[in-house]
Image (cartoon, rainbow, N blue to C red; front, top):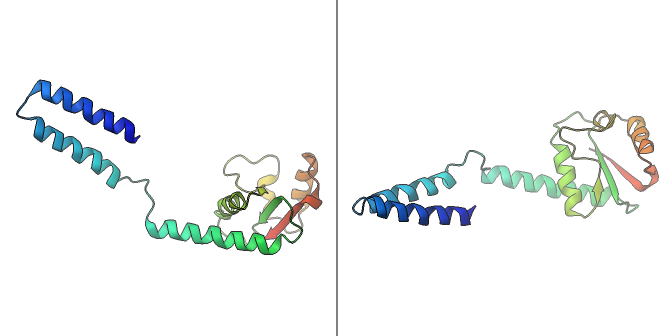
Length: 146
């Protein structure tokens, strides 16, 4: 994106120079304002406090996984038994990624079979059935209740 912006600035300056020599300086200032303004006022940009909060939640999830994964399994499932926010899916996904582990968490819109309902199932029956369907041994999975 930076390279494309740089090329766009140079091309714009070239054509502005061809069109009007006197107005080039003003037009280039206007172009610079638009380029800088686009980066400053991006509505998709996260605030620093929200970013810090997300990092802290991921770190706390990493600590929880390290504490609960005593069997050193490579597959982790974080269950949401308290009925809290669905953001735990992303926290679990990012934490396991940071720890170089696998997870069944992280599905945001496409859940296979009964997998979406399995994260709030306290007796693991739905998740156990899902694991059997895809030939994953339950003994190789660490279940963490959040």
